[in-house]
Amino acid sequence: MLTWADVLLIAKDGNPMPDRRVMRTDEEWRAQLTPEQYRVTRGKGTERPFSSEMCSLFEPGLYACLCCDTLLFDSEVKFESGTGWPSFSQPVEPNAVAYHLDGSLAMQRVETTCNTCDAHLGHVFPDGPPPSGLRYCINAVSLKKVEGES
Image (cartoon, rainbow, N blue to C red):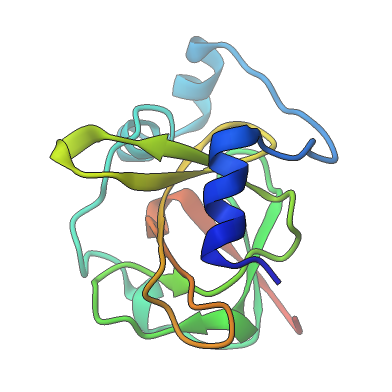
């Protein structure tokens, strides 16, 4: 289980190798994604809080990267954070998500991206529930729900 200390160390020292890599040109991403999906996942944007019903969905299943289908999160670790974005306490695998120190907006944060295709997902914070204490605050537009048992 990853902790905040692990996240900071990975963000500082380097991300683990992904199981595979997906690389496309900017033109290929634009052809695959809607303008809003592109703005968030490729342009490091943020969707409006409470703009997706995904925040209140807690049915069993997995969440994959919208861009490359890599499994990222399990509904078993999804929780209501009240922030307006889907929140999770752990990725499905330690190498599914990449971490990058983010000093934008005059604050220090840790950006999360898909470790397979570099899609911007959101940020991770140290104010989540036990036992990890992590809150992955993820743009719903960067995810797709994979139906079925987790």
